[in-house]
Image (cartoon, rainbow, N blue to C red; front, top):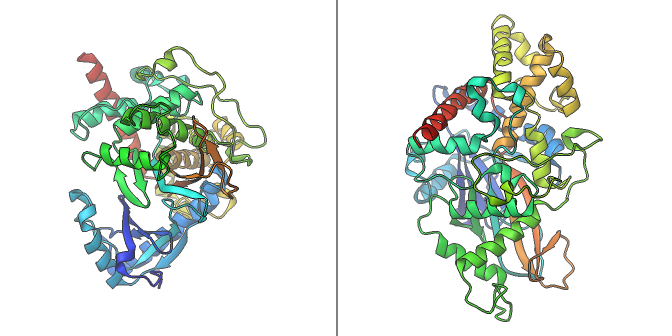
Length: 470
């Protein structure tokens, strides 16, 4: 059993999802994803299911998502087992940090967990580091519009408005948000500096579930924290100035206003997100495609209306690799849904094929190897059930890429320091070392397609109602 042999006080809250609770260990610099109890399963079934789930999560991240997004971005998890009394202590300690709707979700006493490096910490301790270690968790969502030919006329609005911007209307109708965000994923994935910086600023202003900031491992900015602007301003002041009062934090002799700090922080994050850290070919094979920036009709970014750079994202950057993994979805939900229905119907009469096609794992085989060229060939041959299976799998992989999170960890360094991590320079010449991890790379179950299809209809209907009321 593994709990790093440390005191319960060494554990801190990291996040809370549908399937697991994430806690970090400040001593070992590791994060544990602790599985939650699934309803309607007996004790024996739950034990077997929990073990299979964590093994599949680790295998999927290692053998499917890592080759696509990049080995230096996607960490390899490890399956561990923790004692039941440790889980009880964790539940009690983390109670004050969890949202009220999550408190009824109990940890699985089977004790299986996934252990990962703590993305809130830099992987190396460098004596040249100055000021706080700041980690940003960014959930970018879908960065492209579906092909026009895949969208029926009844949903024509989807040809010009991205899913994220439309879904803001649905969330507003359901009372999940108080106001619509100015963030648009198409701006972030555009590769155009002004649009990307605008998108990052929009996330800072209205984080929702897409943006969090940690300072030295402690969450200081998120949608769940009221009045987070002051802690964020204090954090950014420390990041850019630290104890050196001679450093100009604003690029101006005036006061360090929040807006100026956010401007500088957004520019710094932009430089990290377009840093070409990866030389692998990922899912696009030996010839990377040229991606032109797309525009969303709901974006409020003026730079989008002015055109901006026609070049798109830097090949090998983390956003580039995530976008092209998302684009394994070549048929959109409206095109894949009929194929999903065919597959479900086939499995009802041939249940043995579920295992033959490894639809629920294991993932360490060629059946889950994804390239755009292979997926395009299947699109041209959808009469074949084997092609249907590949297209459905590609869609599920794209869903993971559309829902993943980017963890960017930054610390200022001495300008003449020689450090092992990559370094970017901010607008006034100060240097920052950084590390990037892509997390939340779990497999999406086959039945998720039904839910995604139904939600897609709800999103479009809510958006059409909203713009019709204007």
